[in-house]
Length: 466
Image 1 (cartoon, helix red, strand yellow):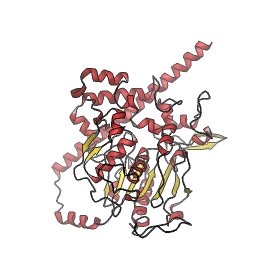
Image 2 (image 1 turned 135 degrees about the vertical axis):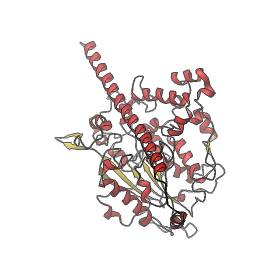
Image 3 (image 1 turned 180 degrees about the horizontal axis):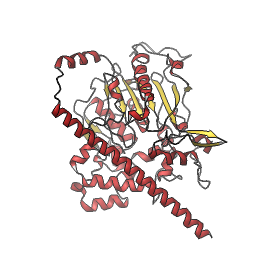
Image 4 (image 1 turned 30 degrees about the horizontal axis):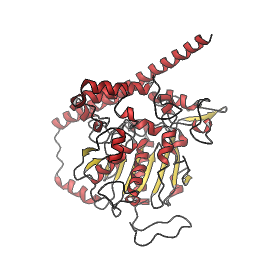
């Protein structure tokens, strides 16, 4: 009887793995084919209808943005920036809503640490330096891509930046700000936390997600993977993609592991075998994104990240569940993307294994059941683990016309994890409401020239104005 029960459970797990793999593969193919179709259409349009826009309009546009701090949109896991996937926009074209928006292309599966380092050099300029100690520990080259002069070389305390991060991108921004405060970039000893003017999170991955365990991360350590799972299939696919090193394909989309030198040109067949069996590469050392997104990994990362008193913080937490008869269930069917529906259901029923120690003291399953198909709503509001940061829940934007720095204002939005990216038509009017609010807040509410103070806090000294 026990063997029959075990066999049935195994069959169900394999069936779920098969369905999840097929759904993700189809969605990935859909995104890729959409990008290709868009590129072909654009090239055909450019060929048939030549643009008559003169240089005078371009000059006027440039003069209008002088003095405005850039708004930098940072993508999440499996994301991409401007220049990848042709003309497809990760943020659904939201970058066109403001005159000075940057959309960096960072590693889509690289670790929070590696992405934060890359983001700094993308903006400031120069060759990416991952740091000697980190590079040796993780088994990759110390130096990466050369960004030349950078997208915003004047970046400093007097020329700060607004950052907007989706999903894991929010944690990338937080770690970057901490690195600036810690003066962690060799040759740039003048950095500090005030280089960041504001941080806006959209479905931000602040405290980890239980989805990582459903996809294959082990609940006991939050670092390693189960032998058979969706992430193992992903791991093999990524290794093969990077090892084959097809230049035109990697120019179109790149997972970001070039600094691991996985290419057949460098490692040969032996290198491929070493990566596949787990002896070398990012998946062997844990220097990739998923360990950073477990509850344990996020708690470890957060233990070194601060919320700074002179920076403005705002967070949109999303959810596609509701409470019904004492249970958490998906809030409908049509409003949830097909790729996410199964995970919404699974996360809403999540129970941490009883034979495994909970990820933190005071953990309760019920608090982690509201979700958007990728992240738990409790994780997206503000940093909570290992200590809770100052926060304020708001129901409408009118409640925060005057923001106070050093406090995480957060709002809960009915949406799944990919509502506000890639396909803006799917989000409808809500897409414009969210991004208009974000950009207006950056331009109107948090653009400042004088130092701000928290309630009951004495003003900062005059030597540190913005």
